[in-house]
Figure 1 (cartoon, protein in one colour):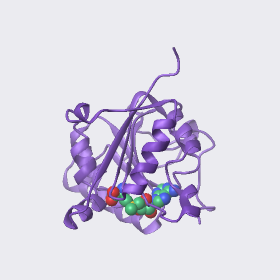
Figure 2 (tube, helix red, strand yellow):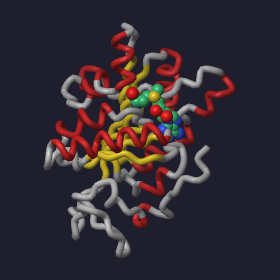
Figure 3 (cartoon, helix red, strand yellow):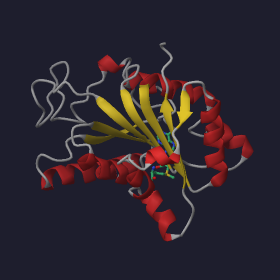
Length: 229
Ligand code: SAM
């Protein structure tokens, strides 16, 4: 259950200094150890939804060192583990990994409380929970309603990455993304130049488990298209 989770009333109310102390000054006279006094001016641009043990964030941190990226994870223990992992990486590699962090939250709720309209350039949905039973399909992380929310926080030209080893779930995500007016599938031949894609396939703990078990990986990426012209 997530009823005791805290959400900012709007993105402007969010104090990011605990997550990214090298990029955000604490709000409202709070004291956060090691935090800068003045914001760097950056905002979170990548969101890894249901990030699990954080393998993607760690891999992308050095590929996109100028980009702030956030994992969102609902499990307390997993969030704590990833947080410790990131703090250890920052300690062992001073000047690196200041651009990655994790937040415990239910990503199916209140996303627009954390991110402004068009703030994000990439959203990752990697090996999401399949919820096999038909009556549980509404619990899936890709639904028509949630896609409209993702389109709101994602900027035109931004990309949604999905991957699954469960073909039924892959087909479900493709069906709903194809049907949504604000998303267009990116052809596979265009994806070969995208440096994020190899990490989408191989950097997460779930992706590595599928690899060990010689399972299939079904990738589908969509561009958020513009609705303003
Ligand atoms: N993406 C990771 C990977 O590839 O290794 C983790 C995949 S795991 C199968 C799915 C993750 O999504 C779990 O860690 C689960 O706790 C998390 N999750 C499920 N529903 C969520 C929600 N509503 N908000 C945030 N995280 C969620």
